[in-house]
Image (cartoon, rainbow, N blue to C red; front, side):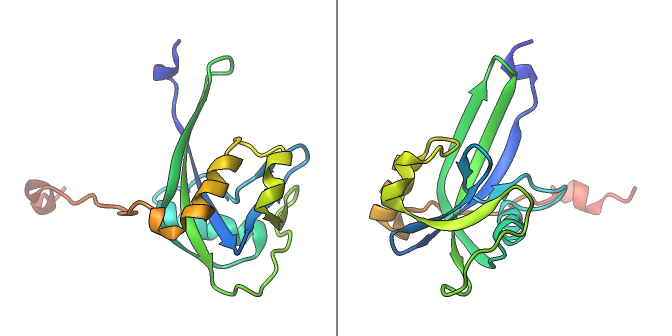
Length: 156
């Protein structure tokens, strides 16, 4: 069975920058941006807010799309799409704290990112985004689904 027949996993993550530092979560063998899988009916922005709070204790306001990435691993039949939203934390003086087992959040200086085992390996993109500033984001439109006029009048 090819990858086209496998489900696509969605991950929603937050890119939170403070000056020349990025918020990352250290796991046992690697580092990741804070984020996770949306719950049923949860928007990407809501997922980012929830996951960042759960993993770091910080409250953030997601903005535009920093970037979207895709990873596939045909050997294991895995296909992942990750939407990374640039987010600003509500209290830039607050420190992240480990709120989820197995994750240790911290702000890491961007010059140290290349030496980390960042998964996926997007350190160069993080540094480029920082250099370009938030004006490089794409619009995040949220849920734009609207029922067709006939569907809106249906009574089941």
